[in-house]
Length: 300
Image (tube, rainbow, N blue to C red):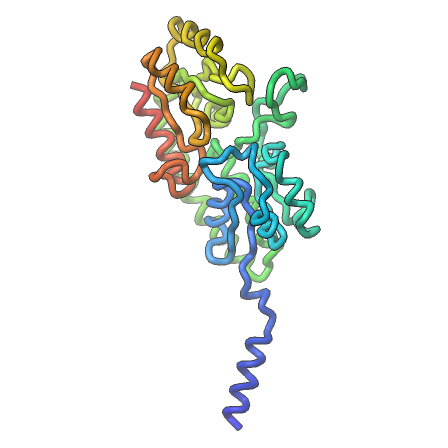
């Protein structure tokens, strides 16, 4: 009889609702949001990341593995502001209602921060511009915390049973992140007004946060590869208004920055841009640590 009751009890345990033990499936468009989701969700979430630090988030293919991951997702976290406009809508066509735009399972980070570089005039002749402003909002740590708070709200609603768990994780992250941000700002104080050249205008939030002075861009217009004549013009410009560094993301062509660096004797930096951008950047904390360290090394 005892054996029979044990078997029945085990059967009831196995048959109990598995949802309470299941992870929340998160689809993160970019590594920075995957890392943030892990900070808040920890062992209660399973995360699929659509891009890496070495892929341009503007341009990826909606491949079958991403479609499968999107179909099973409970929460989609992306930058938004049309950064993923070329591929995310295709994936969402295959997803459930709860992760569609405007629903609890659809979080676009740019919706929760102040947008920079919002164009006054929309004209394709100006290059690849985003109507709602620059989408790379993660490069200011204050924005990360704002998105973390919204992400926590979403997780608490999707997984109410673990609501306190997510709130506790947010409290811990918020305290640690605020302390780290204060330390970064003190450490990087000397970077204010540091003149830089960028490959693509991806760095406006970092520039705004640290007070960097973007004096030129390798791309004549956003998304337009630099021509030989444009690089020559930049070289002439920098003779009169020198910069301290030429910066680019890991997924961008290194040849233009190397050419300009060789000709101008200005250091070329490959900043990590996001989590995984180099072997020292394993999370959001090391992303900002490494970025600031590289800039300080160039600003001598």
